[in-house]
Length: 273
Image (cartoon, rainbow, N blue to C red; front, side):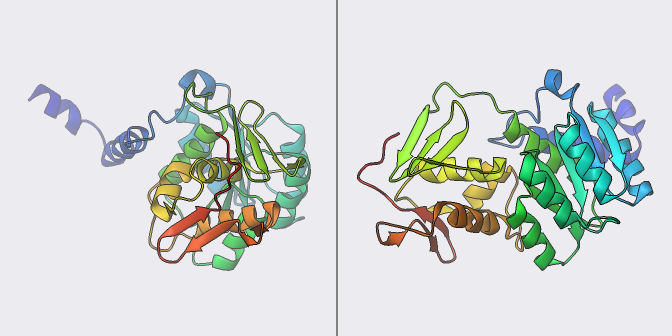
């Protein structure tokens, strides 16, 4: 009864936040959200002209241990993103000065800073464009601030993941070589610049050449969330990989779509893991 009394002392909002946080943190296969000792020094840049939204996002991120800086136009957003020491940026696509896509292009030209893009609900075209330009994830407006926190945690978990002793130092499949020690990728000896999500996706595909990987499996292991009915973000990331690596190798599709199931990376006799 004493524990029940303590439980009732929390507001419904507090209880909901705790429930969601626990669900995200201990979802099977995901482990803890983040290493808190690292998170205390992490700064998040929010680029959005909606001042009230920036304040709301700050209210949810600061209790999680993040430091938040907000700017309200595209030009200043690019300047701060390239000149500041940020762990991640939250970027709205509708901005004064420079629109969000141009901001994203300019940031990507000089930085691999993880970026979560905010788009209008139901605006699939802008969502796809953002992912193609190099956004790591997206979230449609209006959104639950808790979901934004979850997306940020997932992106940063990928970015700060510690080397796994069982993880191979290098993976070579055909003309593509991945070096996990330096997080670099080469195709035919030439460097290929990938976002954090693209790197994680390619590693998953190269680790199982010739085997079908389902979309559900890829979304869970690469994006650290469950696949929702209308979520096509993993397909856009696969499309980006095809463009950067080339669509074909030795006359066959490099990454083949298995309709209604997932994807398969072309197997090579020279594959080495």
